[in-house]
Image (cartoon, rainbow, N blue to C red; front, side, top):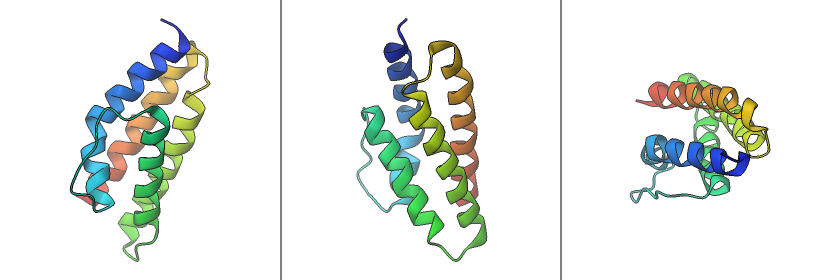
Amino acid sequence: MSTSTAAATAFAALDACFTADLTAIIGSDRPQHDLAPTRFIYLVEEARDVLGASSHRPWQEAGKDLAIAAIHLTGALTAPADVQSGVLARVRTHLRDAISAVH
């Protein structure tokens, strides 16, 4: 599987798992799915901005997790295939941590 195919598959899995929660964080009532990788990163960044602007400390920490996830997601777009799985595993951890802090 090529790097771009592996990345697309991984991003599709992240989209399926996390888009509904991320759109709820930004206040959207219409979760989108089948997002392009760059649009998924943008969604993570939007949620990061919402949580980071909160005065509620656990949400601010969740915003930091999303910031780290966005950095790793961006790196995963161009990372070699042998590195992508480790990077995306860290992304999943940060996304899960952020979302569980909000719920």
